[in-house]
Length: 298
Length: 331
Image 1 (spheres, rainbow over the protein chains, first blue to last red):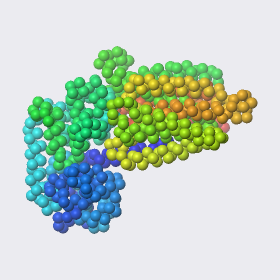
Image 2 (cartoon, one colour):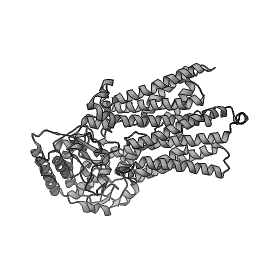
Image 3 (tube, helix red, strand yellow):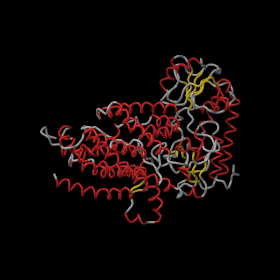
Image 4 (spheres, one colour):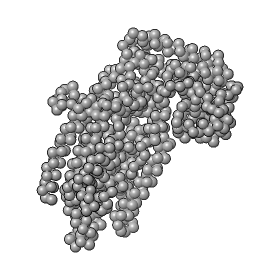
């Protein structure tokens, strides 16, 4: 009995896009950018949906993926499939003026076909916080809400700047962020989580891995011995409701400094690694865990 | 031939502890000197990080290889291996259920181990019952039913995977592709004890399996009943496979290649082949797992054990074939 090496892992990697150079917003040919602000938009990524709501364009969102969960209003919006299984027909039937997506090889063929059929398809790339803020501005312009976009982007930038100011000059805290507990899978180099660890005054101890999301064994964890472990595994998210409680698979490793010092934490909600506007919250939350001495405990 | 068996026995008696030692000395922080085993700073790494995996690897490798050896015998097919048995599909379904329901994330019982083992036993009982209802005509029917059941189980798992949230699909993927985790000492002791008893019982049927290879009519004239011997070997192999899968998911290749290599290189005598397969399988998997753990230090991430077994075992097997299979056609 043999099963294919997991399509699941592949799908998950698409969920965590690794930074690649490119424009923040590009429109696919031949349809190109819309001439007027679109009134019906299908968003093919939760982060894009969050940006649209952030700039007050939530009314225009006609379709979202089945992974969309924020803000709460998205629950009643039509679902158009997932990252690998885009429901082409439903997207078309929604008659969107524009489709917005992340660069994702899983749906590339489908969105190119949509662009060929005359739908305006925008590809939004947000590998780090700076790109997210730019995307907030650019999508503000697209949706005819340039002022709101600029204002929101400025507000988000100043929140990050405030954190940067507080952690300036402090020793960077050694950090591992885990997205899975059994086996422990960490955020590696070039990932979005890696970039926000640095913003929050931490140092990603898994940054020297050769892969984006390295699987670590116990020995590796014991040797890296991080000051702080952020457990964002599903176990941590679901136990204790949405408050986030680190999973026993990690807190059971008694040899770890972070376990002994009670510095294994979980951020409530899964948005820590979603490159959307809540990045400011993530950076503030992480900074408080990394440098409790300068931030009031949450 | 006697001489060759004697040498082989002595060799594997030495290989087993040597592999265990090498596996204990290797890890993601590098390969350490034997003296470091006594270093107190290494204590946590040795007892928490390495020892549980070395033991699990030995249990899984021994169980799968011994089962493979017996199955190749009773099916008279060199391609037989533990994962053609319906029990592997059953165990996979049980583990999948535990992961899909999120039971593995509670800090209570080792649910993945328990459910996959329970499902494996239930599958074996079901297959035996169906066989009995048909009048117990032939072991081939039981095995074929198992193969179909596995295909069915695989399809069911693929479907469940599709329904699950991404993080859970990922955990399931890790488990199914074969990986060793950190089970508690009590879990390791129970599963390990079961595997040891299974290997011993299977080895005890070695003589009857040998006689059976002469054909059923010869065997029955020598007082060995074909159907019941095959059924016993089938049940014991199922138990061993269940024990292995419950610890590690589906680690491929070991149960196929180890008994095959020993059969080619040493002897087809099952009295030797079953215990020797267990010992070599244990050594082989301990070393493969050690390689996985050592590679973390190089690439920063742990490669899947199921892949390493084939990467390390494949070339080794080809070399063995060339060396020992010098038939009339030439090698």
